[in-house]
Amino acid sequence: MDPAETHDIFVSYAHADNGVALGASSPVGWVSALAANLNEGPGVLRKRIFIDHQLKPGDEFSGELLTRVERSRLLVLLLSQNYLDSKWCGDELQHFVHTHGGDPEKPADVFVVEIFPFDAFTAVPPIIGALRKRLIHAKFWYQPVNSASPVLAGYPSPKDSGHKVAAHYWSVLNELRVAIDSRLRSLRAAAPVDAAAAKAGLPTSEPEAAVADARRQDASAALGTVLLADTTEDLELQRNAVKLALEPEGIVVLPEGDYVGLSCEEFGAAFAADLARSDLFVQLLSPTAGRKARGFPAPLPQLQFERARQAGRPIMQWCEQPPVDGQIVDPAHAALFATESLRVTHLAGFRSEVLERIERLHTEKIRRERAAAAAQTGPAAARTQRKLVFVDDLASVPALTGRLSSIIREQNFELRGLPPNAPLGNNGIDVRELLRPCRAGITIYADQSKYLAVYNRLLYFLNQLAENGLAIERWGVYLEHGTVASEFRIESDDVVAVNEQCLGDFLRGL
Image (cartoon, rainbow, N blue to C red; front, side, top):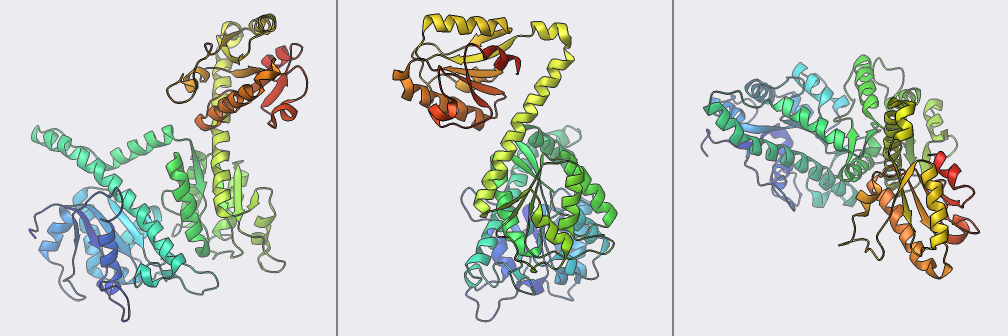
């Protein structure tokens, strides 16, 4: 292969980590299999990957390899003690950072793959220490329950790893592959623009600025932001499962890496910054308290929870089953299992609860923003402000409809509704846009022969509110007798019965 050819990925690794174990079912080493698997899977972006199989410990770092590093778009770094002990691995990283003009502490195009816990490493070079403090994309090691040592997921091959550890391997591999493909697609899209700019003598794009802009845009369009606390080693698999479940729902998950390797002061600053950006703090717990790093007053699970509580952030905690008496020696860690925020349930159910909580927080945030905007307009403007209420009157009783409409207008509201026989759902009226500017909704139920139709439409509108994060504050159901719970089996503080006597109070309470 021509050394001047451009590669998408340069794999930087220690050859000692790529041996083929005797008795393994795979004919290739762990690193070679990982590199090949980055090009496999549904929807994968085909990539030109360079991995050197010739250089051995003690060999000189050749000019040809320097050229290949320089002409690679991304560097995938497989972090292990063997890597740290290798001089030429550090040379590859330094040369990549130098030639790509990135921040030495957080290069935009270096992807770190951790194949053993970082806090077990010794003699960490400064450039690796600075890099690892703020950047981690994949942890392939896994700490089995009741095991003293972590294992490398997928070693010697996924087939030889056992179901649970193999599942961890494929889950982390997919996350890494998606992150790499996303970055490469953005680089390839920018390449024609940069080439034209260079030809015209204009400055080309800045990778760090582009990444920062993209992250800001993603965050502004997100449903919400979750700070997913670092876990003890035995919960890495579960933490990764939660992260992978939330991100496709439009939720930003922080931190971008983790807090392992930071000093106490660095952790305090980084955690506070992430906490300020977050809508919800989520923590997974096991009886394992975790190690207390040098200079830290307590293990990370305790520190993160206490700082989230002090900041007044909403908190959700999870454990699969409560610890038995005497199982946890550390009283401070045991106290984490005695909070009102703890959910003891299966992980899939907890992930759903987190998503529902974020959706509610998103709706509340919109309400607060609207209230603040209304307050800034002043009393005179508020009196004349155009306010809307949606009324669904399936079986109109003209006299009743007229009386209710008069009460609504007296409270300075205008009415919105659907045309007679208007279809809902696919190929029907876009109900989301109809409801979006409204402050409240009202369903009129005055004809008991229409019960089933009224019930189905009420559910449809309430589902639209939940699924689309609309800022309608309350929904009223006009009933001549009974409650919403007794008539429709819907129990919610935000869905209430109204009549002619209390409709005014219902609207004034918005």
